[in-house]
Each structure stands twice: as structure tokens, then as C-alpha cells.
Image (cartoon, rainbow, N blue to C red):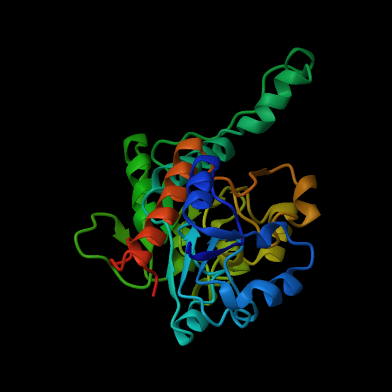
Length: 313
């Protein structure tokens, strides 16, 4: 008998085929009445496949009394009710490391797009404004600027490594100063924002970081400063971010994540000094395939009675 697996979010095509060949799948993602579907199949389910955006809730877990493992594609697991999983004896896994480089690349891309005004420059050529109105307005140099990174984990360190050759000064903020790190540690995120030209959010989501990038932080960055977010929409006071961008208290922003996804606040569309991206920093063929494979590897390890590859709890 193949183990019964609930699919909240499917894997990449190659890995989905492997999933279908190895397990009996129950496609929650395709069900019209989600609760009715869970009530019908819930007792059979021993494993769940999901991702960092959808996760699994306490309410969903209540339908799954025999669940043993949740295998999630994504480094973030704030959408997984880990506490409820632990209470129910359910193991949860994520997919760290394999997406580090692509997410760090996106942070750098947004950094350059914002500071050198690449998106508006593209439009300036496409619309004929260059020939009609003359030279594009000057932007700001990258070299010698100060960059503060909030969250110097795997991704934060990869971002810093990409920034170093560009001749910027780097500081970081986190819960604690890290041993063996050459970058300047700043215990106060508002003070770091006052110091920085650019602030990059690279910390985990969840209750501990909710609203950490506050209105005070954004105002401290100031009208020449830029905010880059490849973390989670929840880490920033989004209403304050919109207001600061609109009235010039913050110079610019580059955002891959939003509070409400996939339908972010419509106010963003009318703000010219923000670059928007649809939460796709890890969205390369190579990385999404590697993430899906790690989901399979964690399931295989569990059912073989081996240690999970990347456990969360």
C-alpha cells in the first residue's frame, strides 16, 4: 500500500511525477470544497506536501488525526503552524540552502533597480521620452554607500557577499552579534536605518519580526534612502511604507514580498518610486526543481525510518 499524501501545493512537474508514482495522492489544491474534501479523506492522510506560502493551519491539522509529516517547499515556515504540528506529534520540514543564491541575487537585482532607477529608465526609452525630453535624470552611485542588512542568516550573508565587491560599507542587525563576522553589528534597527543609505530585510517572518520595519525605521532611512524586502511582507508596516513612499519621507523601495499575496495593496501600482516583483525571488527552474526534490527527499527519509534531511521541529 502506498502512503496517502495530501497535496496542498503540487511540486514541479518532474518531482510531481515521482510523487504520483510513490504515493497515493489526494489533491486538496484541486478540491472545490476544501473542508468537505478534508472531512472525506482526512483520516487516511499520513503526509502533507505544501509550500512556505500556503503552509498548513491548526484548523486543517484538526482534520488529519493520523498525519505524521509535513514536507514544505520553501525556507520560510511561518505559514506552517509548527506549534500545532508539534502538539500533534507531526514532523515538519522546509527547504533551506537550495534557494539561498537565487534569493540573494534578487535582493541585489532590486538593489540595483532601485538605486539606478532601471525600471523607469526602461520606460524612458520605450516611450520615446529620451529623444523627446533629453537625458534621463541622474541617479546615485553604488560605491561607498552604506548598506544595513536586517537578518544575517544564510541569505543575509549571501547578500553581503555579493555587495562586498561593489565597494559598499555593510552593517547588520539581528537578535545577537555573531562571532566571526567582520561586518559591523548594530543592536538598534532604527539607528542602523539612520546610518544606512539602503536597508535590506532578510529576516524570517513570523510573530517575532512582525512590523519590525516600522514607520520610525523608514523615516530614519529618509528621503534619499532605499528599502529592499526579500523576507516577508509581514516584517514591514506596509501602510507606513506606502505613506512614506508617497510623501517622500522614504526615497524608494524594491519589494519581492507583500502583506497580502497574490493581491497586494493596489496603492503600490500608483507609486513611481517602488519596484515591484511577485514573490518570485527563488523562482528559477533550477532552484524550484531543487526545492521540490528536497520535499521528496524528506518524505523518502521519513518513510524509510531515517532522519529527516531538513527538519523544522
